[in-house]
Length: 248
Image: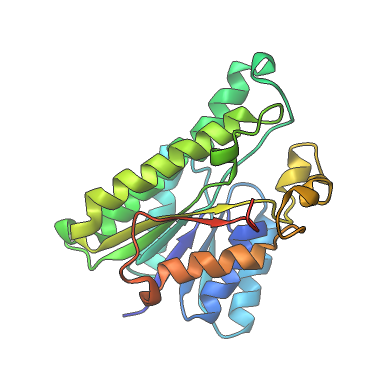
């Protein structure tokens, strides 16, 4: 049976690196994006040029109707879903909690937490033996921020990722007997453009001295952990929170 993976936020950074690596491992890949159509198309074209199958699927994961349409497209164009990577996420500008607006908090939790729940729900409905599925794997992209708290920068983001950690543990236990494994990776300081979107484009370089390995990581290094967790090589691994953080 062909392996089919949906990667949310798959147009850039960790998501794009995961899409490219999964394709090299033989997965048909659905590359989700919210607004970066050109970037998503570039990932898809790279996969197709190497002989793989891939589609780009637009959806804001915080909008239930768009999530349902996205999964329906994957069903129709790639076939039965066997893997999900909940990678879509946002940060915001550096701020203290006493400076955060309601709109900021709503956006942070709608995308990072509720979006992951909606996608996990739809994946379970397709994968679970309870629903007639054949099993599968879910990897949630959390963050080392869930352990560190990110004081003075984005406690809201850290709290949202803390929710993802708990969701990973609970969902893993819930569906373990239904053929689905659920794990998370917690990247540390990784060289992606998410830092620039939070107003700190040099964050990795500025904080590298705090990492025991004395450097930031790459999106490809995180992708290796994600694809391993999706694979049969991790067949007895579920409910795990895997830190990819250089020791920080």
